[in-house]
Image 1 (spheres, rainbow, N blue to C red):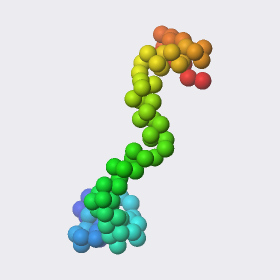
Image 2 (image 1 turned 135 degrees about the vertical axis):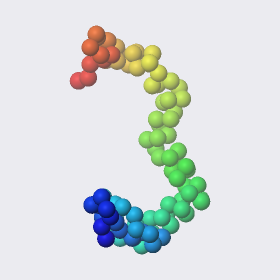
Image 3 (image 1 turned 90 degrees about the horizontal axis):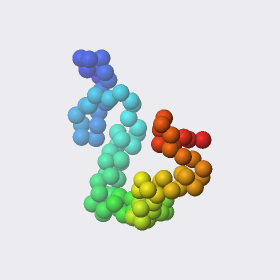
Image 4 (image 1 turned 60 degrees about the vertical axis):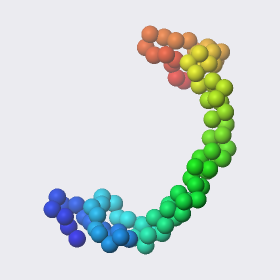
Length: 93
């Protein structure tokens, strides 16, 4: 099916065609992805996953103690032998 501006439309699980630029996957066409997302939202799993991933937990802990503050960044970079310059805060290797 073509739409006036030359794009292609594909049927969705609701039944109304929507303009797309990529061909949808079989899971999108069958509605599996929508049901899965809806179930995760209802259970609140997506919020829990964001906090329980190991890398994210470490990052949040570092942020809480001020690891990413400007003064700590300055201390870390000068300890590595890099100093601020006129062209930028710190040169990258």
